[in-house]
Image 1 (cartoon, one colour):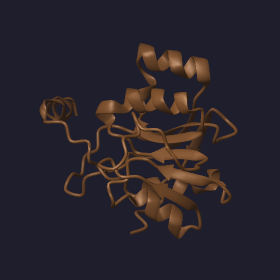
Image 2 (cartoon, rainbow, N blue to C red):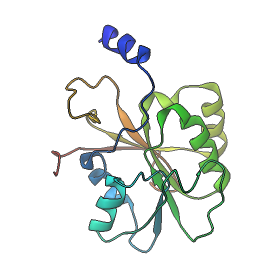
Image 3 (cartoon, rainbow, N blue to C red):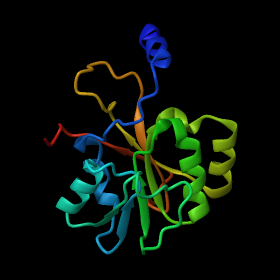
Length: 171
């Protein structure tokens, strides 16, 4: 396990890891049909957008090449931000979500609870977690996943800690 982590850290950063459908199904019960969900990092193949639309939710998806979530202001109406942000810029995404003062759901490594700056933001604004019961495999050719990802939310769940079961792949 330790060797796998060291090897991973030595690799070139790869932030284009698409969210498997199985990571999205457990959150559907937290979403409201009358809200507009903004998938702000949809590269055109987002399972987040696909699963939400398939289940009757309204989604606006913006591509990184067309819209920079971290810099641009949305000129459209939306109620909730939902995305699996690039992990190398997770701090900027968390900060930006709080600045926009909208409910949000970010799929992040559970280790995103750590860190002085993030801790200050969570303490100041609050955070809710939807913790998945198993690790999500983002890469089809890899079998060993060494970190847990969970949904970091604000304004979504009634409790700070929520535990959900991941069922199959739903592919």
